[in-house]
Length: 596
Image 1 (tube, rainbow, N blue to C red):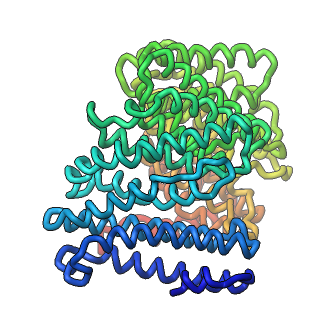
Image 2 (spheres, one colour):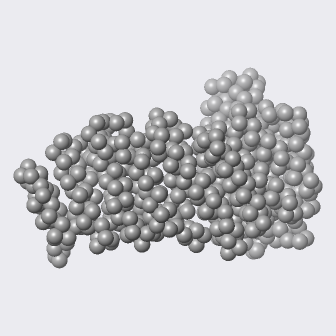
Image 3 (cartoon, rainbow, N blue to C red):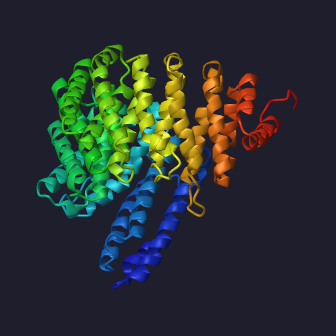
C-alpha cells in the first residue's frame, strides 16, 4: 500500500518521499525480522502454493525500481533512506531464500519458485554506464550470495547449498557476472567514474568468493565465464588504488570497493601461472609502499590483509625475489636518508616476517634477514640521534623501526640475536629518552613512540633474558630513562582519553616482568627507587603518582631485604621518611600475607 501510494504521487515533494521511505524501511525491516524467525514447523502460516515466493521476490525488485523512480522525480538522488530501503529489499529476498532452505528437505517447490524468480530478475538488465538498473539488481541479489557463502561454510545445510550452487551458478550468476563485468570494464575504459559501480565490483568479489568455496571441476564459474575479463579487471582495480593512494583521484567508496575485490581475490588464490602470481604480489607490494608514503604511515587494513594472504601462499622463489627487492631498495635509500620510503619497505618486510610459516620460506628469509636487520639498525640509530617530536614523519618512522624490531625479536625461529645486537637495540631506544632525564623540562615525546619503546623492552625481556643478563647496566639505563620520563608527565584534565594513562600502563606491564629476573637486576633496580623518591620530593602529578603505584610495588618486589636496607642507609632524613611511607603502603596493599 505504501509503495503504491509512493507511485501514485504525480509530483512528490522531498518531504513526502522522505516520510514514505522511512515507512517502507520500517515495513521491510520488520518483515525481514519475522521471516528470519520462521522455521519448518511454521509453514502453515505461509500460503500452500509456493508461487507466493516468486511473487514476493519479484515484487521486492519491482517496488524498489518504483522507489528509485519516485526519489529521482523528487530530486533526491543518492538519498540515504532510498539506499537503506533498497538494501532492506535485498535482505528480504535473502531471508526468503533462508526460509526456502529450512524447508527444503520437506518441500522443494518453494526453492524452485525462488530460483525461477532470481532468473527473471537477471534476465533483462540495462548495462548502460549511468543506468541504476544494474546497481539495483546487484543489491537485490548480493545478500543472497552472502547468505550462500555463510551456509556453505558453517551451516547444517552445507551440502544442500553446494548442490544449489550448481543450479544457481551456470543459469543465474554466470550471465549476471558477465554482464556486470562488461559494465564495469566499459565504465573504467570510458573513465565514467560518476557511474557509481562500486556495488558491482563488490558483487564480482563475492561471486568469486562463493565460487572458490562451492565450485567443482564441472561448475567453476571462473572457468565458465570469460577469465580474460576478470584478469583485465584486476589491473583496473590496481590502477584505481594507485590513483587514490598517490593523489586521491577517486572517491573513498570506490577505493574501498577496489580493496574489497583485491582482498577477496587474494584469498581465492586464483592465479594459475607462477609468473602471474609473482607479478601480482609485486604490484600489491608497490601499492603498500605507495600508500604508506603518501598517507604518512597509514595503511588500509584490507590492503595489508591482501598482501599478507598473497605472501602466505607464495613459494620460496617468490619470497626470495620480494625480500631481496626490499633489501636492495633500503640499501639504496639509506645513502640519501629517505626515512619515510625506508619505513615503507620496513613495513612490508615486517609483514613478510610475520606471515611466513613454511620451513623453506623461513630459510629464505633467514638468509636476508640479517642484512635487513642491520639496515634498520642504521635507520633507528639515525632517527634516535635526531629528535624531531613535532614531526609526524619522525614519529611514524621511529615506530615503524621499533615495531619491526619487536617482530624480529619474537621470530627466533627465523633469526636469533646475539648480546651485541641486543645491547645496540637498547642503546638506540635510550637515545630517544635520555634528553628527558635532566632537570630541564622538555616537550613530551609522542605517545606512540613511548608505547613502542616499552614493547621493545618487554619483548626482549621475554625472548632474550640470557643476552640481557650479560648487559644489565644497559637494560637498567633504558628502564630508568622510561621511568623518569613517565614520572615527569602530567595528565591533562578534561582532554578525553588521557595518553599518560596508556604510558603508565605500558610501563607497569614492563615492571611486572621484572621480578622474575630479580637475581640479576635487584642491585640495579635499587637505584630506581632513588629516582622515584627524588621526583616525589620535587613534586609529582597526583594522578601520575596514583597510577604508578602498581609499578612501584613491582619494583619493590624485585628488591631483596639487603637492597631495601641499603636504600634506607644511603638516603637523607627527608627521603628516608618518604621511602618509609611508600614501603608501608607496599606492605599493606601489595605484599601477600597468607590470609584470605
